[in-house]
Image 1 (spheres, rainbow, N blue to C red):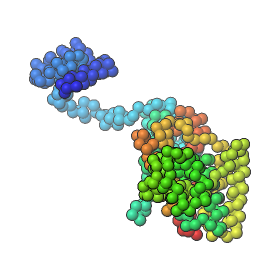
Image 2: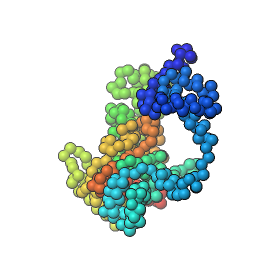
Image 3: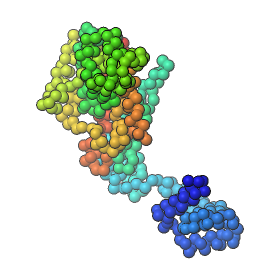
Image 4: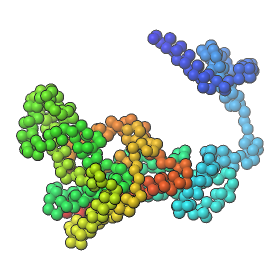
Length: 457
């Protein structure tokens, strides 16, 4: 593998690859004659002809021909205005991307039938005749994109105590799909009381069961439980360790748990100790054991306070869950009527439950690589939407975030592509999902703001 031999191998590969895939571009007789005349006329130098020796096939001739053509073009001056009087109009027309007119027309009809677009907005475009495809598609793109309101495309970001908003959701029609792309995490922070006690215990259960309902009936965003709970996507092995040690964690003080882990023989343990960062025999490094204690105790806190869900047990179905949500809504209303100190949050929960109850009769599952998108590469669009409990479970969150990032690295971009190939699909699938996304983000923001308005109520 000396340098000259590598160079020759690369040249040979490039030449053969060109001839295999683009060899039809070379006219050996015509191009050779053109290059000969160009050489006689001074457009080609002797050094240019070396390409014929480096690539003794059509690729070398293609390179030489391209040089001759470019140099010829550089010596020709055409007055475009005189040669083509309507050049400006032609350039605009030629600059438009090629559009499938029947597809654009069907999509426009779908938007009109759904009441998203009025015929009067389309009539001037149709009057253009066969040139209207690009304008129709642009109008549909804007119409569908408007279903996801600007305020729901924003993430609230806090850096150094200063808050600002950042656009993290973008939409566009690509091919025959409507793409929603995420360019950043959209965190919804919950400012909960320092201790979950008193009348907030009941409210807290309703809060996290409502979040679970939203993730089930709107779009599958991440709650704390799905992000880093015992069955969490990114802390699954740690969840198994917690399940194995659950009884010990409940009965031990932190000091007793620390002593147990310090002297643990990892080779004899019945669980995967690497999830705690531990290996070998004790005594272990104190910092590692401290972090292991944090992970296990935070897992216990998450399981105790932040993992409430609707009933998905064997035998349950959507009808059962609808009844459960209706009972939750009645419970929320009763707390509001009794003058709860958390009434602002309860009103937000009542609104969210109303949406979920309404969606339950026409619910269909989203996800599981159902649509083209980045989910097949590791991370789905809706996984970038995450509810976070402020100032809690930081070690557990860091563990889950590391797992998330390892999957996200496989994605060039994070998106989902909703189908647009027929009016029926647009009406029954794509538009409902866009609307569900809008509703979900609006409810999450309402819940977040209700807690910001009454901190630690």
